[in-house]
Image (cartoon, rainbow, N blue to C red):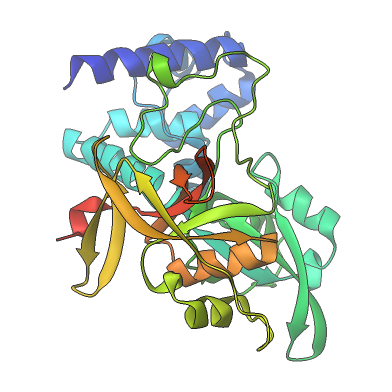
Amino acid sequence: MDPFEELERMAVNATLDSQLGEDEPSRDDITRWQRLFSYEYGEAKEKIKKHRSDLARERISEDLWALLRPQFEGYDREAYEHKLTLISPLSISRVRSDQKLLQVSETHASFLFRMEGPLKQANAVWKALGSYLAPQFKHGWGEDGEASFCRVNSAGKAAIEQWLSQQKSNHRPIFVRESMARKDLSETSIYPFLGIDATLPQHRLTTLNSTPEPRQNQYPVWYFFYGTLADNSMLAHQLQLPEQDIPILCPASVDYGILKSWAGKYKALIDGPSNSIIQGWAYEVQTAEHEEALRFYETAKYEVVRCSIELPDRKDAVVGLTFRFFDPSQLS
């Protein structure tokens, strides 16, 4: 095992345990371990205390536990972590692999479902989600006319399914998985930024009150295009602009990136050296709705990142956004 990974896990466990204030096991915890592992009362209590004091233990992430919980009725996350210590190292290795896969894939997935039945009201959705990420509510049209929809991530989806099961409800919402480019711009650093490591000292914000731009919900916002979206007709089609409204694209360039090929026919931008320059076009996206249309067009294969855009009619570069390919290992 990587010693740095081991130290990092110990530090995380120590921090989380201090925040949770875990000390003496509760009677409910002890009873649960007696039932699940056939321990005597005193043995279960000591096992729990030993588990909590082991800073090197394998801690299951909240998102992964949300997905696993429906399969392990009667367990809480702590009991499941203990269960892993009783099985083969291969199984533990698989869980670690699942967590890494979840971090780069499932936590970024989003799902849309129609609000009806016990989930018709927004407060019911909030109750079902508990402490998970806030949902996004949308209004649109369904088969029966106007309808309300809700967008959640994979952990939220699992939480809703678990809540419905606990309510003994027969309602089963249809979750439609969306393939949309991820956008998660930090408010405390320039991350994510094309080709730049935001953790390096020279790239950190100069003051605590600094707010990096563009912000997550800042509009209008400049985008740099390098592929099919750099075509006026394609861009107008994706934005569903009126025929007379032709989008204005400006010649532009970005550095710290290189272009590769995906599936033999699509251009894909990834991080590159500081002396690399990519020529393309820039467009000022006016609304969140237009941006969302572009994110759907690019699909979950890409992610939105900040970048420095050079425009010929401007002395200084504009800090805007572009689509970076999510997994460079798939490129040629």
